[in-house]
Amino acid sequence: SSGGSGSGSGSAAHVPAAAPPSDAEVRAMGVAAAAAALRAHGSVSRVALPVCRRLANLCREAQNRQPAADAGALEAVVAAMQAHPQVAGVQQRGCLAMASVCFGSDAAGIARKQRAAGASAIEAIVAAMQAHP
Image (cartoon, rainbow, N blue to C red; front, side):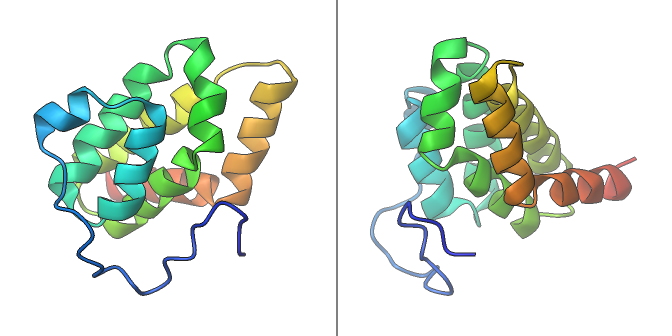
């Protein structure tokens, strides 16, 4: 399960590269920065929730969906959801973010859905629904 997009951060979660972003910084992020922030700080619920919200909002616009997927947003959202199974807000915003990124019935949209499934998104969504009925 090693992807080609530099996501080899196995158990090295405590690399103090940068402080988690502020809410204002999150609100200013584009899709690539949001995906990177979620990869780096998804284990921090106060970051995971607004970043998932930001991705969901950005990916309402069709031109942001593929860049978000290319930046690893789907995998980062799944990881954040797995890191915070009891935080309802992270679960809800994570589901919204995945739905926004995956939206579309064209070939690219179908490929994003397949990528999400390959990243265990379906299992993460089912777990969220079971934990937060």
